[in-house]
Length: 90
Image (cartoon, rainbow, N blue to C red; front, side, top):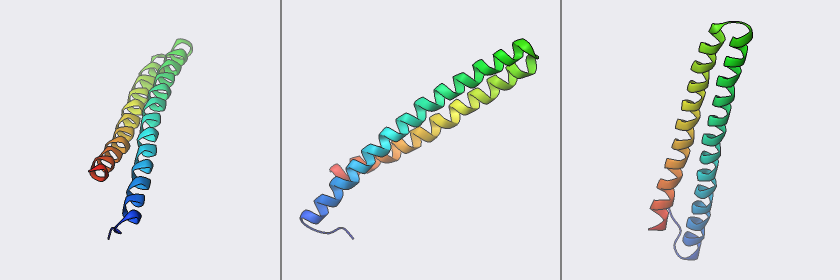
């Protein structure tokens, strides 16, 4: 149940600010995921140079999997927060 008057608008304002924080958090998750995935791919190629091709393939697979998981997770956080903002601003 939503309170009426100033308590309701105050709760909406707090919820919108929280959703904006979650939106920023989702963006950070996506950026860090891409950075981490690229580092894993580079590390796989570096190890392949010294030890064998299996490290390059493993680095590619794990790196791309890492990038995709973090991208989806960050997108979900951002999508939910944008939905909350849209619902509460109207």
